[in-house]
Image 1 (cartoon, rainbow, N blue to C red):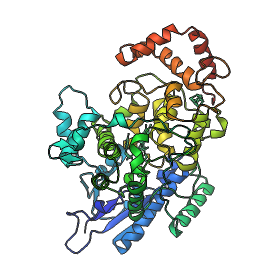
Image 2 (image 1 turned 60 degrees about the horizontal axis):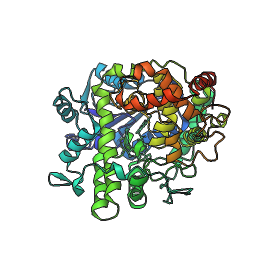
Image 3 (image 1 turned 180 degrees about the vertical axis):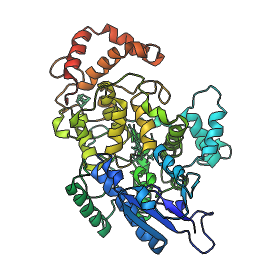
Image 4 (image 1 turned 90 degrees about the vertical axis):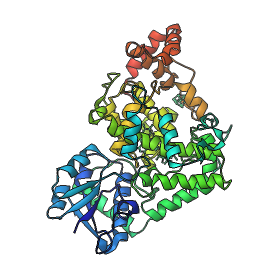
Length: 498
Ligand SMILES: Cc1cc2nc3c(=O)[nH]c(=O)nc-3n(C[C@H](O)[C@H](O)[C@H](O)COP(=O)(O)OP(=O)(O)OC[C@H]3O[C@@H](n4cnc5c(N)ncnc54)[C@H](O)[C@@H]3O)c2cc1C
Ligand code: SF4
């Protein structure tokens, strides 16, 4: 009898109990493999290792006798004599190669995304030489799925309310004033995971970075639904206007924290946006928040997923800016105490404690700093993949190589996201108490982001000269009287923690 092989990011009911999944003699039987080797290959955040193991073991417990759960060093070892299997197409090139190389394994279409491979292929193929714009992809997805639509038109008459969603944090606010997310309660499965991780570490072949606990992210379907419900009822209304804002006293702001459970396969993106649409139709949240959130889930998330496959396996090796500096040890170690720059230190600490920071700290603080310093984009991708609870190959490669490091030369972003201090100063409360001064370019108090921005433009002047969106900043750079001193200063600062 063919059993369904579930990877650790295929844990929701839709990976095993879909309409075509039952067998003649009852429910689909399941095989799950916990491979220790996965954890020896990288130095993962310990909270991420905990979350993944906890989620897999909870799922196996839920499936009960339907599931054989094999703990082994490698997949190959676990699969010996496993008999015929079917598996939903896994989420990385490496895993697809593995399942396709095995005899007696039927590979089904991927699940857990809102747009199928076929629909994306048709859309991309129909564009000829036009760019694969997120905005166009998002609109056709919304129309196809009928999300926030009134017949053929978008609800409210406009597709895009981004202009209402770019607010800085409220003046003098310490927090956004929304309730913190609903947190799961740990149980004996979590306790056993901790014991096992301690033992693996003590045995010496596995090492981790970051803190482990308490578990902040949903590891079961019931917890994931609770997180979604709590977000929709208590936090979604504030999501739209403040989705880009950062506050030192408010890690979570009005973000949903559902990337981790969604990437574990515990929630399906379509059910998520349907719940959000219902909240809008019931008058619970404004359209700007509902639309802003729907855009993230069936827009960005699916767009990134499809680009990962569409752009090919060697996309990850792109290095348009020729950045070759190694990621320094203090950054690998998430050593926030080594850093004086308040924004960077704060975000690094958030990552150390939670394995999570919201989109803007990832893009505009961490990724921006790495790009300004010319760090190797493949190392930066590995750093993000290791350090974030929601990091998987398919989502990290386009987000880091393309969106954050501009290593693809403009496939995902029309210009590098390398803003100087003005952006961070405007969108956060980091700068005022900082040891550096956001307006100072040269000298002891020179802000590493302000100076780093100009040094970045200077270093990449030739490579970026054709980018019309950078024409103004390039002109501005030529007018700087202290450019030479600034470039020398930044060369000296190098890989030091700022
Ligand atoms: C450098 C960089 C690395 C990132 N790495 C990851 C990653 O490893 N895993 C991950 O899920 N997201 C990643 N993102 C996207 C985004 O930052 C996170 O999805 C989001 O911060 C997760 O928190 P949340 O669930 O509270 O999201 P919310 O702000 O509440 O957004 C809702 C959902 O939208 C989806 N989403 C929004 N933007 C993206 C995007 N660019 N790519 C994929 N999904 C998106 C996520 O599923 C998220 O849960 C990355 C972004 C950048 C700039
Ligand atoms: S002054 Fe510069 S380093 Fe300090 S918080 Fe602001 S942007 Fe960051």
